[in-house]
Image 1 (cartoon, rainbow, N blue to C red):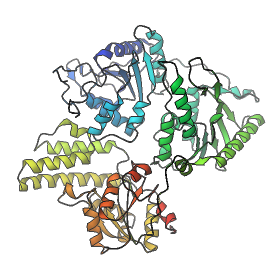
Image 2 (image 1 turned 180 degrees about the vertical axis):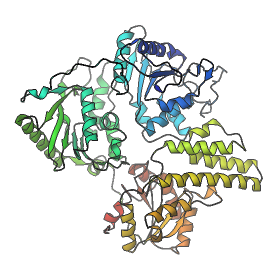
Image 3 (image 1 turned 45 degrees about the vertical axis):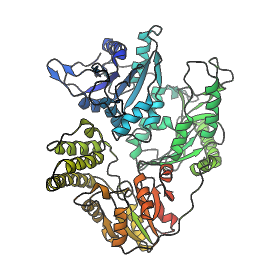
Length: 632
């Protein structure tokens, strides 16, 4: 059944174009007919009115946990205007209005939800149609929300092919619905299942648990706090990020992951051989690129994570949950399954069943001995595996020349010393505040509400300057500056510095290195934050954005860095500028100082090197080891 009360929270959102509407509505009717399961409220792309009430779907999307994209050949039609801009009107070139369909604004809102919290996105590929990811890439880029993994995510979405003239819809819908039933909030009207005896009642038994049981047990063990060390082996890494570790898990300070991943060089060779020889219509393999991306991307969360790579194809897949003494207590594992000549064609095939063998050392001596052997095997493989740096070297990424010790370090603030907007929905809140304010004076397009708030502010600031006199625009823009600074101050008050930054700042200062800050944030916000930690006196110069704000003087312009150098009387000194963003690297190069990338924000070390970085570190705290300084 589904909840049809108009004021109920929406759980499931069905997205489609006109040609996919029939399939989507059939799926909704299927959910409605299931009497033992309550799937919550379900909305359509065109479900804007209930009775005499009209709803804004963009306010409904943040409530949803599941998004089903019913992909037809015209799914992305009308998202872009002929000149490549986002189509906000809902009309296409011939004047036809798309009414019963998903809009560009809705797909952008769904992507923002994906980036800010755990949601499930599923495709239904009608008659084998595929998603035009290139259109989505342009839409997200135009809206200022394109992240480094947006394209890969939509490229790698699981395809559920529905052939309208061939597929049994009841069986197909049943398979889709099973994915919904894994959620604890769905299925509340199901009858209680009879308890079954524990498989551990036979001391010699090794119970096999299904995928659902594995996910639930995994989540419970992570949340218990009893196992501070968890070792993974045989995964691609994507499964861990997408299916097992929740967003909240990644903020655990007391959890250390060791991940022994598949080798993406070997995986890539397998994929090419397989994809060249598979039967027509079968989905090609596409894992190697996601494994490689995880090697290069930064890990912005509190949870400690170390990755190494097999020098060969793994035989086992699983996880070991270890106590404070690093002894494995509970484990899950399964073996690779091999088919030398797959019926579907393609290369020698390897897979791992979704169920897992469950081992608990407390159940019997048999279990304890097996866990000891599994852990011994893991430690052997770990010792002989390739580190991330070795993998980069292995794939031809040359090591950058190490820069000389600096006399002065000027650093960025946000995402280098602190992460103000780890929750990206805050940037949408800022966009709304700014857009609402400027709409009192100029016409503000809806797209400004869907962007990074700072991007919206910069453009609207310029529009006011162009449309009003110098005196009038100065008054209007001054109030906008106050709104942005107030929002930053409120966000800073709730956000701590990166762990260990205070010790690093003190170590740099005590090591004789002079310090400054250049940032696009307000100077008073930066000073207030540093004062709380007793650090403001360690910085000789703090250059925030100008007031009145001048968008021409913020990075990638070298203006602020040059101003900081002048304030510190540092011209001609050996100067590093450290920052997390591509624009930081560009500003540093234009200012003629050493550009040091800090991969603690949204860009990887590779991105920063590509933008001109002379050298990169995973975090600001790594400076102390490099400079051989002692953090106190």
